[in-house]
Image (cartoon, rainbow, N blue to C red; front, side, top):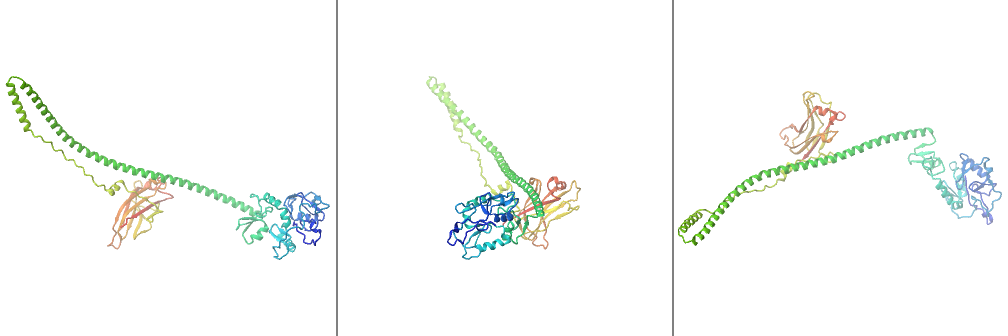
Length: 511
């Protein structure tokens, strides 16, 4: 163990200036200076090297500088014949410094040194006890004065000695190899740390070759599992993308269908309006012709009268009397003719258009019904799965019972007895009970390949029940048929792993 400490026994003399060995805390005996310029007793240094050296190298007890051991051993390090207070070699400390009480015995004894591993200050007695404990035999002990002097050196060394994450280094003691891995704390630690901080925890023995093999095998297995999970997640991601596109496409298609239906209704209404317009036009033209003809006759009579008046002026200017008599006769004739004619404006035809009140409920029915099946949001949704090989000749498959507000519901699938090439399968919902029920029911034969190809049948139902019968009479709802070949052919998408699924949704109207 390396140590540098104060000297308590100055007794008023000049011993406070006597340099001390940082290992034995006594005056130097055959001092040796190592590569980092720290000096120690030859015997102390040799004993320290025997305990801590590895691969013909050791760390300085003070600054942890890595030193190469000479071929001839400690004797080949530089010898210091005289070491005095005026020329102190690095690593030689005097007993000057501040006093601090011992952390171990909790007495008033002055601390002389500090254990780097335990981070405790110790008096000379506790230091002796600490040194003989087997667990602490390799701990590095330095004097309290040295901690101040070499603080900057230690900090630089510690920064340079940060554990390499790719090497088996103790998480606390960066200069020591980890020998255990604590499973509970998920830390690689040396033997000292394991005994002090992880005793009783489950662990891996990192010095066992079989453990190495098992761990590497386990890591490879984990890696394969992760690769499988990656593929599963990637496949799931692709499924989500496909589902997103399908949802967007379904929304776009449904909105387009609604627009087409609205446009079709508008076109039909417009056509009906256009059929009414010609009747109005024909009646109007007839009235116009009658008025125009009267206007023409009236204009012709006015022109005749004006012509007669003009000729009268010419006759009066002449000396002959016969023209006068003739003009009088014509004038009287025209006058009587005008008087006999009735000047009446003809009656026009009455054309009336009374706007009807728009029945929005009926209009909405004309647009169509929007049904949304959502198993996750509606409790009245249920499904049943059947095996394609469960049919035996002319048979009916019925699901387990679904109870809905005192109504008993079954999903039924019936296959007829015709030849396979012509056989068909009926899919429907069977409801029975003693309760009146008004609402809407939807039955969907799921298509696993493309949701657009699913068979969906919706029906408004008015179920009055069998209130006078002990055994309720079942009602078959939303009956739809599919060819047996289309249902059983996996390429059509209705069958997956030999099974097909029917989903049902019931919406009950509020009374």
